[in-house]
Length: 274
Image (tube, rainbow, N blue to C red; front, side, top):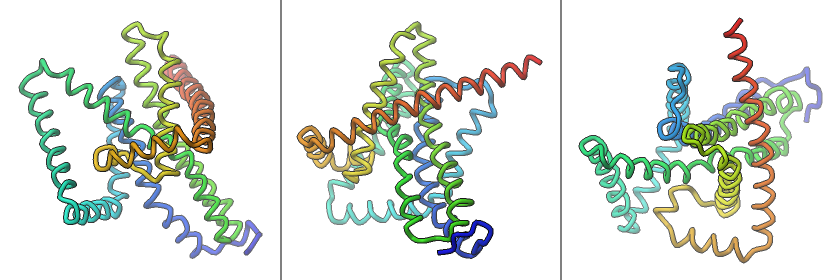
């Protein structure tokens, strides 16, 4: 392993950075999805650049995750062949989505129903944004591959810091959108409890994803497996310790990122006033 920062194997560096691109795009897509949902459901930013920027980021990360979508489609197709119930569930979800869209467009009085369905989807996918914090483990694995020191320090570390910072910022801004929704309705006193509740649920969700290897859509595809995993959590001391640790990390990081975000927003407003 070359320990000199000024001697970089550009071929190794290029492949190392590119290899991280697809999984990072996929995880950022899952982080931007609840961000966009929070903007639609709770608070629309006034700036059209911000609004369209969120959709652009979602589209770019979706495009970068093409291989992952293709693999998921193949897995679902195989599952439908092995278990017809998967196909029934997929068709039922499609029909439900089309039904909700029809109700929303032709019967505005049912808007509340569609809003609550959106809130449920938002809460299910939000832990994916917090999940990105645990991807530091992949940086450790990259270091164990004995990449040159220059590749690790000058390229991989900044790549992971940017990736994790952007992903967790999406998590923080998503929660801030919910808080602005509550603030507009005179429910500011509930914001701290909302943060704690969301961080707690995200800690459980991240544990199920990182350690139990479940996905958000398993809630619909394999609910019995999810129930068994939840039972294991409540009976496992190790699981409770990990979840508590994640809760503390998410709460501390969310508080810090929120303060930085608010500070940057205030600074921007101050510059506009000059």
